Picture (cartoon, rainbow, N blue to C red):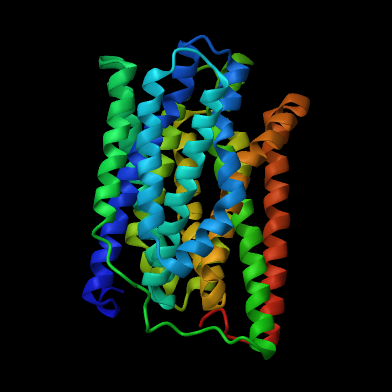
Length: 402
């Protein structure tokens, strides 16, 4: 992959990975914001609404942000987003109670996020050649994961050992440094060696079927990933409370081992997703994720939960970058910015939006029914994805392999 990039592209890609790591470190520190809201006398309902409020700009402006980044470059948008985050963090220093201004701050944070994440994703898509795009997106996702993990640890340390003032200043400093680093990203970084997608005839029909299937799959993957991360901790608590298990199972062990496996498989196995065996890998990963959703309902011990989390990490770890790459490589160059925005929006909608459905199912029928429902939802998504993939190849065999 690296040999096909010129010096400017390699530097830009390295800077993007660094910015992603730092930005998502500060972003994961914001996961403790709900605790801050409750510390200034907000109830759980209000703090929950405030946390979710930042999603609104992301859903509304992801495609616009992607289009602007694709047309004019990512640097200005990312700098603006980082500075907006930094300023908003400092504004929280003046907050002593929940007022309408706090909702405005959350909207500002959401707007800042859509101006950073989507343009960075677009820029990765422009830099990495099509046949290595899954690997390039995988490394980008690993940088985000490591940033998220480190930021969570830093945030926890700052809150426990200092005060909220130090917490917000730390976030502001990190995002300001991100803005400074972005200034070194140079000019146009798109690869001139990519194979262009044809705009007419059977090739176009084939590519669009693959794109639609991939977009559906990204939403489904976001739903599965978000539901597992958000509901497994309370699911383990419920198993203990109802007497199904006698010894507590560590949700931290499950989540940490699963996310660590996701990162490692993307680093070590990234080349598999760009090779000629990609189709087989995708099929095995889909089967593995289905198996994960079924096996979660059978967890009764820490050892078995560790086994299930590893299967989850191996399966999901390769599916996300591969599916994103498939959508981008089969999209016309002129619309890849908007498609990138749509990809990030759909994943975010699945990650956060499906939790509302999952929570309703848990309330009505319990956790086991919720995981079976999620499994059925995933199976339907995979079947639809495979149908559109087959339909696309019927028009032009080989468009998926580029």
